[in-house]
Image (tube, rainbow, N blue to C red; front, top):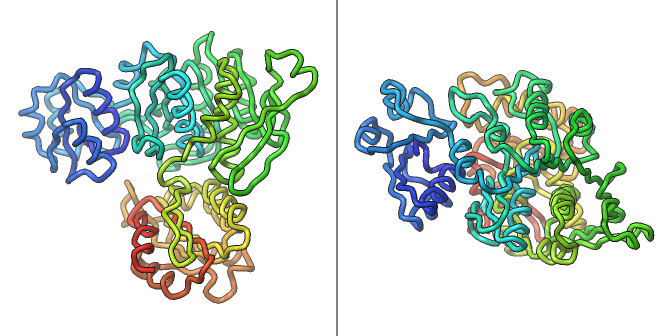
Length: 470
């Protein structure tokens, strides 16, 4: 496995090992947790540093390439030159789970929490397994082998290999497809929204005749796609009419809501319009949607509401998704992975609901030049629930800094222009690096403040480091 240190690649490596395969791997350097820990626990050895010799000496029957590795990697180059058998990890996962009923969760945002929640529920209800893009706090792992009927995948729309632009979710061949929402993302891969939408249309079109689609009725684009299909479908929603419709939401220490199930097999309950009560530890409307997607899926598959409700409440969430790092000197620290504008907005809105009397600090690291530029009109509207905002330099990720098409200074200027409240001195600032952000926060934070760090790159340890110095 070339690039074994990724969160998905390391999970696949462990599932392969547990299935009886001999697994070797390589990474550019020493792997970071959680991959490092899980590889060690499963006694999977890997080379820290890429070299063609790793491939020559492996004697492997198959080479699995991370999407982030290309022909500039000496191992990939050797594999290509010698025409060795290779693929991406989605094809491997399909082969491992082709005897299971495959539940694939996809959408622009919310898919990690929704797939994690579904994985948790089905593991408790059916001993089923899962593989998602974040570590579930209940298990300290992002994967679980299946001993039941189902396997839950987080369906990623990003490419499978450097020379295979096929979105990963196509290879899983969903039996049950859960669609959380659909907005434009990954401008480095999709020319425009129509190009991204076409992949979702193809995903729906390739569903088996006896498949099931569960979709968000409040997302107009998903409604259009699903209505073009003849596959059985059920909807969930908060604003629009849906098969599973939220009747009432209460935000607080827990997110509590009632759902009206129009598909209920209980004719008395259906006639009386009775509702089902649920609650989750996860805050905000976005998590009400995530929970509702899981509820709609499981109720349609025939699982009872009482057991779903118990297991829903026991779900602690996914690391780096509104993860409470701790509180120190009256200051609450939260770590989050949000980088799409809608996810940023939903995260900050949830924080304002959960901490209504607190001053909300948002520390945001824009992710890739292409995404930042393409989504700037939405990004400038995302910080309305924050009281103080720090914007870092843009994290280039797979892009080259020398090819930057937008700067953080431009982002700050646009946010200030469109948000009068951020024109007040020091309420919105650009920071050059993590140390500058830490110094500002250490100096200016007051008791009862809430700090939300939304970063993917170098800033993603900020909440932990801040906790140490407060």
